[in-house]
Amino acid sequence: MASAIPTLTLTSKSTCSSSYLHLGVHTSALTLSNNIQEHVVVGCSRPVRFGRSLKHRGLTIQSTATKPAKSPAEEDWKTKRGVLLQKRVRSVDVKEAYRLQQENNFVILDVRPVAEFKEAHAPGAINVQVYRLIKEWTAWDIARRAAFAFFGIFSGTEENPEFIQSVEAALGKDAKIIVACSSGGTMKPTQNLPEGQQSRSLIAAYLLVLNGYNNVYHLEGGLYQWFKEGLPTEAEEEE
Image (cartoon, rainbow, N blue to C red):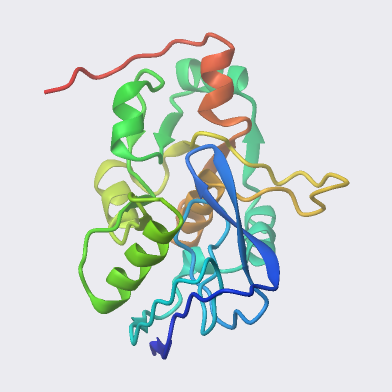
């Protein structure tokens, strides 16, 4: 069932805590109120938290929008990571990924937005974006657009509801898939990130294994590292 968010209020005199919005490979720190009680994932890795009281810069926005029911992609990272490890999703570096693509018929599934894919991608990669620009104009979508715009972001994203359907149209359940995004993320624990770092490609890998894909790998370092190491790249001309 959907849960109602009675108001989304932006006011002054903030007592702040940090949340994060990931668009592409960038992380923008947003200062939000401690009164936040509800949240929604709207970026690629971590949620931007919206709630009943969100205080900043003397601006007040009120909304009676209804938040859709929680989707699998919105599950917390600890749960997603646990499933990925249980399903033995393995991370490979970019050189290993290139070798697997060339010698073992692996497919690189690029889950970045279409515009990023067209600018540059691995040869032979298939593009199915796991997040897309917000398309609809429901009250909930308008509220999210307003929240993005408040922070100067005018191209907010949402989960692509056709992601699995599009992958299934291109790849069978036994396909050997390496999922790639810009930054890659990691399942490896570090001192600062004891559970690793979520990313669009890891979210996509999670959705794939939930839907019966058995041979899913993850591109460690992402396409940023692919390009940095000078591996083959191609682009699509603008129409």
